[in-house]
Image (cartoon, rainbow, N blue to C red; front, side, top):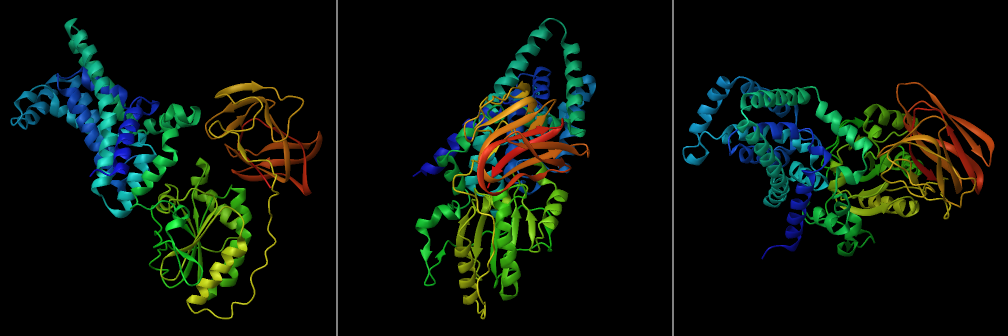
Length: 568
């Protein structure tokens, strides 16, 4: 009997793959796809698409260790793609070279004589090269496949889902390739076949050079910054649905996030639940304050895994508690590991993370999780999130978001006592910041997650006018802003006004080029402070002695990137 979960995933993979083939992400490979199809025999389009689909699937599944998240394959396969494309372009420019290349390949087709002389096998080679450039287009469903195959090995289920995604893309790409061939046939009938072939050769060489100089990567990055998410990924809404997310989690062995498995977790005699073995740290990058660690090395100690990111105010408010627990219980057998999983692009930078670790006074180990490998292994969805692991390596306590610090500390003490710790003394007494219950909800300044604005944000550069009056929790842009997916970049006379309820107001800001820029802050029309923006981090725009409300106005120098507001 076919598993309903697999049926849903396969259908979704087909739809997602087909949708990917008509997004801007395909543009870097489209010229080469059309050129190779137009300049070849009748079966070349089929060969190109089959080669692309095969390479794409193999790269995702069998070579997952060479792929960074859903990014490009490693340098070796990039070089292979560049050589094949440039070589094929040269062959098109010089027909005698093309004949020599095609001759040995067509001999391989004697078991299938219909492909002889029609460009099928050279098409497979070109398609295989394009497959490496097409890999970055993979969406979250392929990210799940990659993370599973990289950590648990390739399984039949993983291969089927990846193959379904490739098949969906291949169907659409074949239609595009056939259209290129149809155009090529019409040009050849007009007596311009040689000119077409040489033109297509130039296009193929240009594509290979673009890969060599990373122009395709920069092009895709520009698209991501300047187009809304639905334009880049039409299936993003489906990917974020609970049904699909739970099925994707099943690729990890049927385990959703630990917090979602509460009903199936056994309660132990100590009163804590047992969620099962904890995943190891996987797909990580640089370690801070420690050499690389594994749960096997930490077996016998109690481990607290904290998912955080350095501009998340909720995470920052948790840090004093984590630091106090590290100082008090480290010698009793507790190891805290901060897993830094970034929310914004600049948070991937190791230098920025290191500065944050130092400025926050963090002494416990911190590891970068830029490709969400460990995040996905835990099925996590929150910043901050704490997973407490006992001395046997099982997850025993889970806490999402701020709060219940005493509950987490009691669980730490229980597990430490079970491993033999005595004389733990009294619990820590940390006076951390606690946000008021009615604080203004967080919002973003980029297009992707902006909420609460009186005038909806528009992609690209626009001039806004802030209204004289705002209702509580409303935001308004003023002046010129260049709105992108993750951020808004200030232009002339740029401002943001917000009618807030909070004690403290925080904003994530950044600037490029190394030149400090200023943000003037006003409360109900009166100047409060001036922020000097000299790095990409969280800034305190306002701090009151007690919770209050009012109209906060921020006036920006041009060239400042604003990312998110949080209130506490």
